[in-house]
Length: 278
Image 1 (tube, rainbow, N blue to C red):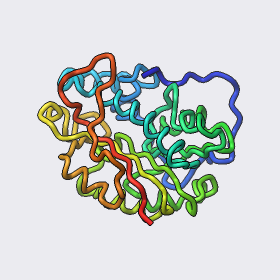
Image 2 (cartoon, one colour):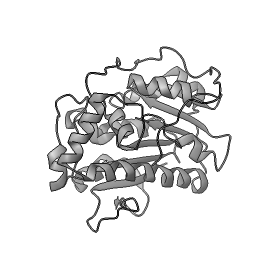
Image 3 (tube, helix red, strand yellow):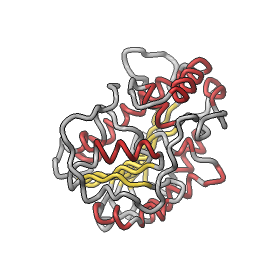
Image 4 (cartoon, rainbow, N blue to C red):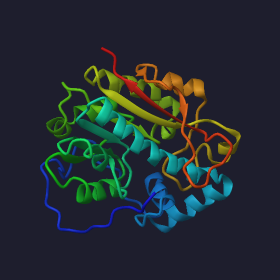
């Protein structure tokens, strides 16, 4: 996957990039590692610090498959965006836990189908929000908002988000590589159910989640100096997380390893797309 976007042409302010949305992002820390910045480093980006690079390299030494997981997540974004925009006919999208901008982001992908698609990027990382507001929220159909997936009702109730996204119409919500950083006590299944309850019938939710495996044990759980603990789950646990959705076939699906470094072993990463019933 290509490196993160580099600032280019002059950017104009946008209606949706409000300076202090409800639930403002976490303060920027460069002395501890951020999962978003670690992923940026693993994808070849430059928006990261020494702590992020050191933690990412340490994870790779313990568990080389981590790189393939990050790459496969980006590939699944491409596939799911095309599915929801072309086949499901959705025209508004929310990317929760969007991470740092890449060469192609959700808005770029869905606007291949219809340039009028509206896209909201949501994150609680201060650096992610700064970059999203500068590089992504550059037109009236795109917004960048502070929000925490662990508070789904507050996230959906953000009045600025509601001015961009019409929740009376179907929405595509992306949760890629997000719920496997949510603790059991924060109830990931309840988070998805709360999001579903706030979406119109015909909305879709896209989830990717690491599957528990012996090779991921080395990087599972809290890690000193990293802002979130990695929590792979079993197939049954992942299925329960998405139980409030009507899953599209094939479900659950193990995501394929990215080319060209294919490995005969299954990639421990589950991807699914579910429809909001109604």
